Image 1 (cartoon, helix red, strand yellow):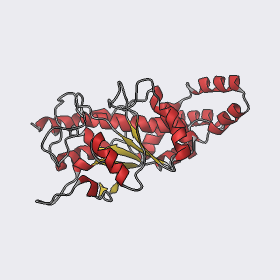
Image 2: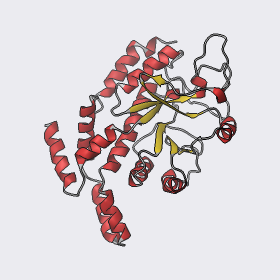
Image 3: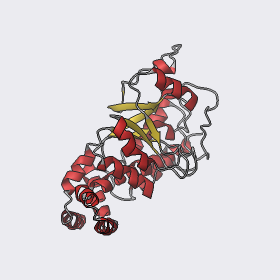
Image 4: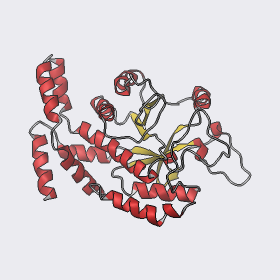
Length: 305
């Protein structure tokens, strides 16, 4: 039955000029970095005092990781429920040093691997530190964080402009509710628009995509899984659009037809393609992943003080 639904959806997309197999294969090769700090409320391992720069979490849900081993176990659990190609996004405060060793954050080398996959680090500290860090390090990429703009600003509008001037950009993807806030990423309109702009600009190899939020009011592993899957859904949705055809309509000023087609795209059977993508990646295709998080919470998280 699932295969029948996929084949039917595939035909619908092919009828509007979309190569579904190419979109699925393309997404499988797009790395998305999962941020480590959702697991321990941005505590890290190199500090004993409070967070600085206005960074704070809300809530005290059970099971926060307290050690490197617990954090890695929780991240491993989350990644087992997330499809696609993944990397790790580290903050410099998560560096692990030998006993008695002290290394300033601006000297930390990030060329390492966790879980056998690549590590990408975009964050070196709070805003005050990061400004001077970026200024003194050649090759630092401009970082866009859609949780740190005015509520009336849209990051999706800024991406094409930045790509005109920078060969590469780093993107922290979150859900800004108010200025300077980071909430679990959902498949909302702005998330979809950000993905569309990256795909339309053929910039998947020029934008380093990483999630960034820290919510301590809910199960932290679920927060990871929901956010990562939401972003991958947004990317797949963007790849399943007849972008060249839409661009042609725009360039020819055929805006009525463009509007009509864009509205029809909103009811295309995207969910059946997403489920097939998950099946091919060997992860749960629907909400059944949540039962595995619940089991982990009962067996592991609930035993942490």
